[in-house]
Image (cartoon, rainbow, N blue to C red; front, side):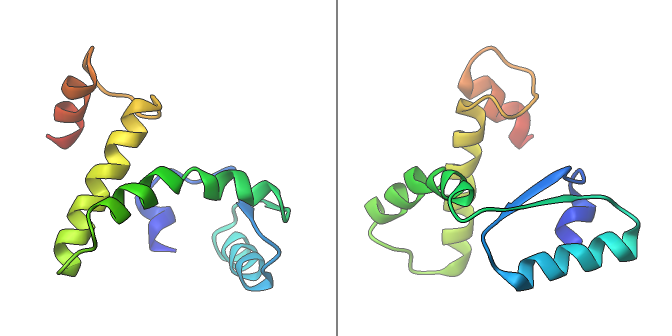
Length: 105
């Protein structure tokens, strides 16, 4: 659960009906003494998955990647721009470009 330690701890996690995911989150709650709420719903997760659709379309438009490193960097940029456009980041800057530069710095 290194990703949870490096970011803010979530209050709720939405997952599909996978038992392995639920078991992992419950184990984390027990080990760390946290109270992360698990929302398991077959259709609720679809909303979250649909948020990745524009990223998939951008990746398809690049005609694939030759190396893993370039894929990671490019997809990271796509996701960063999407987060900034949706105003899900707190950063200084009036325009999208200014916000991107302040986040990237």
